[in-house]
Amino acid sequence: MGTFYSLGIVQDFTAKSTGNTSIEPRDLEVAVGDRLNLDLFSLRQEQGGLLGQLKPGTLEEHLEDFVRTLKQIANQHRRIDEYWNLYGCQWENYPLEYWVMEFKNAQGQGIKLSGMALFLFIEGKVGAEEFEIEPLLLNWLFRHSSLENPLAGAVVSIILG
Image 1 (cartoon, rainbow, N blue to C red):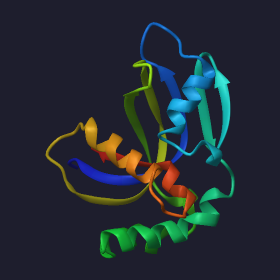
Image 2: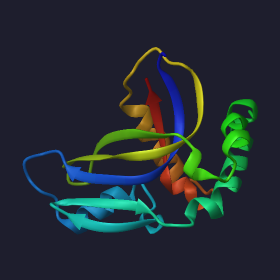
Image 3: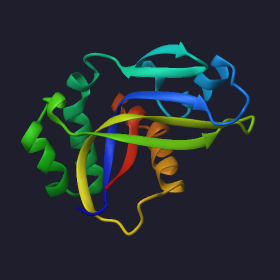
C-alpha cells in the first residue's frame, strides 16, 4: 500500500504519563488542553490517565464548515473533496485511524496522547513512516489558530501505512 499522509479530527483519546512518576490530574488536563480543546470532549480520569470522547453532535454541527475552511487554506479541492463527496456529513462512514503523539508538559514530564481520529483526506506517498516534530507543530498551530470552527481544537496529522 505505501505510506500516506492525512489530517484527522480526534474522536477519542487517552493521555498518560510516559515516565515512572504520575502527573496530577489537573496538570495532565492543562497539558492536554494545550493540544486539544477539551471543551469538545467528554472527559474522565482513569488509572492515572485522562480519557476523552468527542461530544455527540460536534461533527454534525461543524464538519461541513471545517472542510470548507481546509479547502480555503490549502487552495486545493480535489484531494479534500474525495472523502467529502463520498461521505459528506455522515461522519460515521469516514475511515478511522489510530494516532499517537508524545510531548512534555511545562514541568518536563513526558505525556503520551493517543486515540482514534476520523481522517479527512489521504495525500501522496511519504518517504518516512514516523515523524516527531511535524505532528506536534501542526496540532499546536490548529489548536491555537484564530479559526472560528471549534474542530480546529481537535486536529491531528496522521501517517498511514
